[in-house]
Amino acid sequence: MTAELGHGVLALWGALGFDAELMARYGPRVLAGLGATLALTALSFPLGFLLAVPLAMARREGGRLAAGFARGFSAFFSGAPLLAQLFLVYYGAGQFRHELEAAGLWWLLRDPFWCAALAFTLNTAAYQSEIVHGALAALPQGQREAAEALGLGRFALYARVLLPQALGLSLRPLGNELILLIKGSAVAGVVTVSEIFSATRYAFGRSADFEVYLWAAILYLILVEIVRRAVDLADRRRLRKLRPAG
Amino acid sequence: MALRGLAQAYSSLFRGLPELLTLFIVYYGGQMLLNRLLALVAPGVAVEIGPFAAGVTALALVFGAYAAEVFAGAMGALPRGQREAALALGLSPGLAFRLVELPQLWRLALPGLANGWAVLLKDTALVSTIALADLMRETQIAVGATRQPFTFYLVACLIYVALALVSSAVADRLQARAERGVRFAGR
Image 1 (cartoon, each protein chain N blue to C red):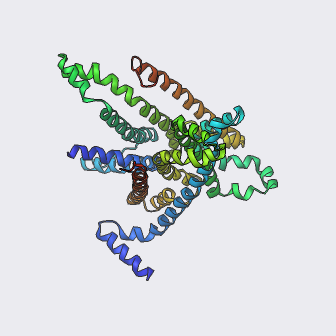
Image 2 (image 1 turned 30 degrees about the vertical axis):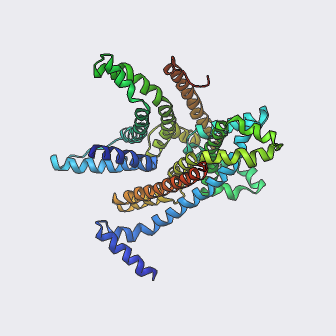
Image 3 (image 1 turned 90 degrees about the horizontal axis):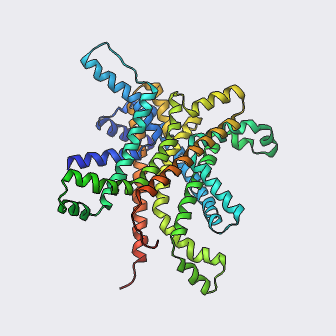
């Protein structure tokens, strides 16, 4: 069944004017690369978000120390290139091998995939915290005053009033950040993670056929377009709900 | 109409592709394309695109796509009345653009351009993957010689962060200068 489906796809691919034999040889590897790209983003984006919310709150509510830490974190991880951060984690870990082995963390930092996931999480956490921080700052002061007048504590103020509104405002910028992360994940290929980019680079190195880079381009453009449309849809639904009755 | 479609296709293509992929497509693909074209005119002649030229071209394509969006947004945000008023005062179309529209476009486009600059600065690190001797590449060499990867990559990161902070300070200065004489609600 799968084999027949595969033959069908290849026949169609050939009919479209592409090289079916090339696809038969390197297609599966590139498809596996797509899986790794998706896994990397699907892992780092939500984890980054979980870090981003407390970081954004620390900048608004925290004392000098917490706010300063959040600002420094954000400046460092959004100011340096993702590639440099990835090298810092992947190669940098080697410098502390004995300490990491003693702490039982070496297996994690020896693996390029987990290093990439860690670097991407920290990087996207910095960007997402900027977005959430900006959205919190954009909310009218009256929201806080009304919540305090109703006797809500600090936790309920954020959980019930400020964060739901700030996240609505953040929807589009967060979607853009997700797109940047998908595109940025190509650098994982540089440390031997076999994602879309490195799979096509391998295929190009073997076949010297430029067509394989077009596959990668098409895959990335499809991914970006899917995210763009999904975010567009979600944001329009959100705005429809917010529209006042009558 | 066709021109608009072309501009939109260019912009969404290069904003949708990973910068690393664009770089490789330009570096390897550009060379193949150039040599194939050359073979038509002068058979037997082959040229090589250096990593520097490929890096500059790829980053320029990406930044161009981004800046085009920024300028399109700025032009959309500028009220038509500005141009109409300038023409009504007797300014020629050229002068109206240079004295009235351009300074305002600059003010509106600056935040987007500054952001694009920050992204560009970080994207330069990617050229190290095609063997160009940039900050990242030199750091890799230093790491190879000293066996202290964490220290050297940390220093490299901090240099990039310092460049980003300086850039953003300059952008703030430029913005304040572009906004002199503009009044905002609530200030």
